[in-house]
Picture (spheres, rainbow, N blue to C red):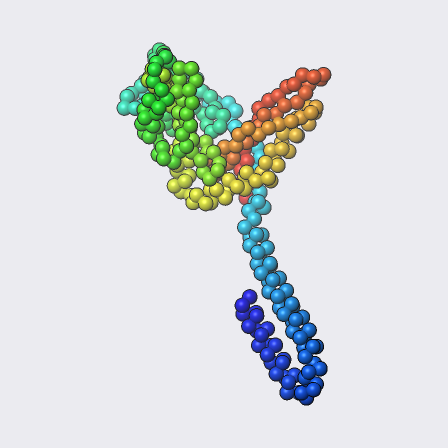
Length: 313
């Protein structure tokens, strides 16, 4: 813009000198008023041209930064509804907190948020542990008969919860929330990327007596591997695309299509969680509570979940 003003200044100078050399002194006086008006008009044109050029640059940048044009698809979640119970080990031995536990196969199920299968094993009458069906990694262990009342506060038990969680995660990268319900202190370590909650979490339950009652983890390695292999900025950008008005609009369309025959349909989105898919693609799981009225005045409802992910090319 500075270069523009200099150019226009040179042009004005030449214009004025040519006027002075071509007219008499009396004629110069007569033309001064006309010249002033011309100068004002020229300056206005210069300002307008510079402003227009600057405005075009901003619009182009905004268009270039717009990432919502990428295709997003919405599908029901979890994608897999039933567990594979045929290809399961009949017994399993795991390590937890420097101790070994051997259990006999009990049952399998699909975890709602992760969409992954876990296989559960009972170790005598002492408890139950679960492992990931894909690789046998420990996902959960629960000790029976350890819920008993005591005098230990949630702060008294916090160091123990952090010690156990630190064997599986870098606790500094997780947000810790705590609460007490009856005789149990709950410690949840939740990982976020940007403002989005991820599926990666660790939960520790300790009784008010001070005994460990339950430990569980969900997709901690998957999210850690994702952040090690991909740029955080790129991950946040993808989450933004999936969580955009366009993505949430697809969820709205799905719900209204599924319940188009219901009267006074309403729904509330109560959770959105980033998940890592099998091919290390990123997805956002949207959980919605749907409600409607059955004739004449009975309120009914259901919980639905959907996966938002980028379309495959």
